[in-house]
Image 1 (cartoon, rainbow, N blue to C red):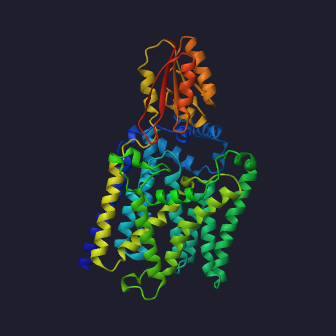
Image 2: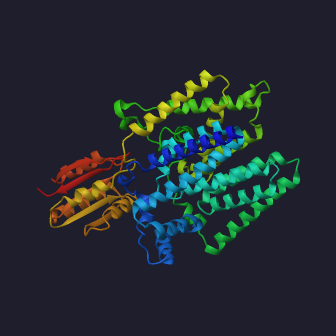
Image 3: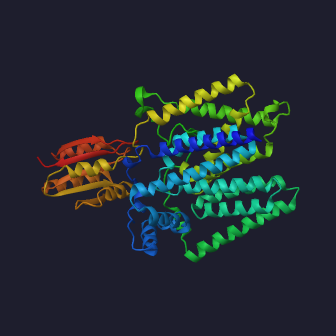
Length: 494
C-alpha cells in the first residue's frame, strides 16, 4: 500500500513537471508574439461595452463565426477575469492546453499505463505544432479539450459505462461542433468507429441516435441564423490540396514544425529535425499497430486492446482525410489547423508504442533520441513564431515625418497592421494588388507623405521595387522577425 502511494505521488509530480514544461514553452517570449490576421479580428473587439457589443464586433468582422460561437463566449468570460489585452487572451489558450494535457494523460494511462501516459503527455507538451496553437488567440486549444472529451467518452462507452460515456462524448462533440464547424468531421469519424458495435444494436443506435439529434440541432441553428452556407463557402479560394499537403500535415502533427514552411532556414546552421521526428513517429505507430494486431506480440503489449488503438487511429486519420476529401470535392478548405485535435491521437500512439517496446535498451535509446530532437526543435527555432507586426509599429513610431501613411496588401495583412497601429494616429490603407500598392505609394509620396508598405512572404517584391525605381521613388526596406517575416518598405519622394 505504501509503495502504491509513493508511486502515485511520483507519477503526479512527473505529470505536473511535464505540464509546467509545456506551459513554459508556450509562455516563452509570448509577449513578443504579434496578432496576425485571424487573431486581430478578435483582439480588436477588446475592450467591449458588454457581451452583446463584443459579439456584434466579432461577428461583423467575420460572419462565419456566428455558426460556432462557443469559443467567443469562453473568451469573453476569461476577459472579465483577466483582461482583454493580447497577452491575457493568449494565456487562455495556455490554460486550455493544461486542461487538455491532463485529459490526454488520463486517456492514455487508462489504455496503456502510466509510462505511456507520461510519454504521450511529453510529446503533446513539446510539439512545436501544439506549442504554436497553444498560444493562439483562437479556438484551437478549446477544440483540443472538446475532442479529448469525445475520445474519452468513446472509450468509456465500450468499457461498460455506456450512459456516462455517451453523456461525456455528446457534451465534448457538441462543444467541438459549436466551437468550429469543421468539428463535424471528428464526430463523423467517431460514428464510423462505432460500427464496431454493429452486433450490439442498442449501443450503435444509442450513439447514432444521440448524435443524429445533434446534427438536427446544427441544421436548425443554421436555419435560425439564416446562414448563407453557399455564400460563405466562397471564402475558400486557394488551390485544392494534394499529397504534398497531406505529407506536410503529418510533419506538423508529429511536432517538428508548426506550419507548412520548412523551419530549417530559420534555425542555426540550417539544421531542422522535423523530418527525423516525423519518420520516428511513423515507425513507432507502425510498430505498435503491428504488435497489437499480431497474436505473437510480446507480453508487454498485451494489455493494450486493439479496439483502443483503432479508436486512436480513427481519430488521427478520419478527420484529416475527410477534410482533404471535402477540399477536393467542395471547396479548397484544407487547412491543418482545422483538424488540430487530430494530432492528439498521434502523441497517444507514440507514447503507447514507446512504453510497450520490450527491449529496455531500445526503449531508452529511442526515448533519449526523441528528447534530444524535440529539445533542439523547440529551443533552437527563434521566437517570435508569428510574423512580427510589432516591427511595423516600431518603424512607424521612429518616423518623425509630419504626415505618415501605411499601406497593407490584402485583407489578412491589413487586419494585423491596423491592430498593431490601433493606438496611433497613423492612417492604414487596405490595397489588393501590387500594382495598386505601387501607384498609391507613388501618389502619397508625391503628396509629401512618408509612406510605409507592408508585404507578406509570397508577394512579388522585385516587381514592386521595379515600379518604385521607375517612378523615381527613394526606398529602403527590411525584414521583420517571425516565420515568415514581413518585408517592410519605407517610400519617400527624393
